[in-house]
Length: 169
Image 1 (cartoon, rainbow, N blue to C red):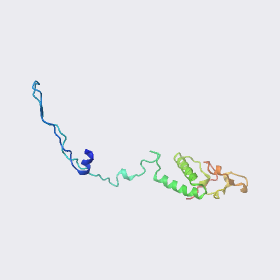
Image 2 (image 1 turned 90 degrees about the vertical axis):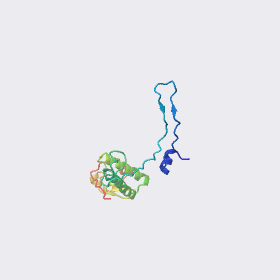
Image 3 (image 1 turned 180 degrees about the vertical axis):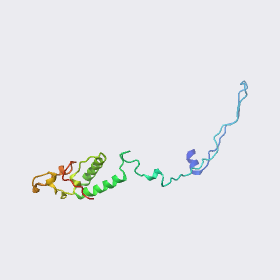
Image 4 (image 1 turned 120 degrees about the horizontal axis):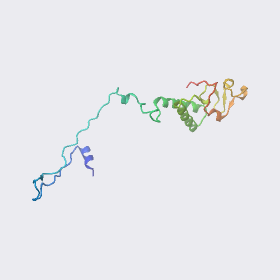
């Protein structure tokens, strides 16, 4: 059985009125006021018209209006960057769990305007899972090219590097 409001919405019917009987005040009261009847209105629920919002309105003009810095939600640009990082870091030999963790860290780094970088973002990084530095001299990671191998922990730490060059996506 549907409730009253639900029935009005679904079938467009108003409430049935069940008026009370007319009553009069007791004989001893001064003023002689009587109550005619009490009932709910039998008017139907007014139709609700859908309002359309113009495409130029600010409601639809900026889909990122509630994203960072107003909330923790990623903007469209951050999502695109995140997706590109997932592809790049996966190609570098990391597991999907590691890739997602690192991409999250990089998003936070970007929001904080931190100047540090991961070796995984560098164009000079060589290899897929043992890694090496192709710009080892300027980066200062070793004194001989044969020692340019990079440990996993070094590749995954945010750092400042004089030999860093951003890789193209």
